[in-house]
Length: 87
Image 1: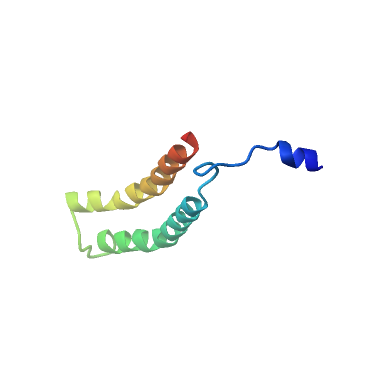
Image 2 (image 1 turned 45 degrees about the vertical axis):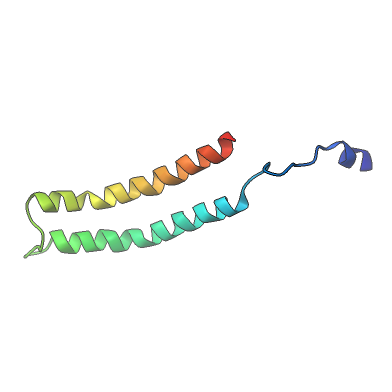
C-alpha cells in the first residue's frame, strides 16, 4: 500500500480542477434557472393579454429575450468548462 502511495506523482501548483470555478459555474446556472420563469412571465405580461404594453416589431424582439437568455445559460458555462478542461 505504501509503495502505491509513493509511486503516485504529486500535483503541482496549477494542476487539477479549479473548485472555485466549478462552484461559480454551478451558482451561475442555478441563479439563471431560478430567474428564467420571472423573465418569461414578464415578457408574456408585456406582450400578451387584451391590451399589450408592447406591440409590433418591439413585441417580436421582446419575445426572443427568453431564447437568448437560455442560450447564454448554455453557452457561457460550456465555453468556460471547455477552457478549463483544455488546460
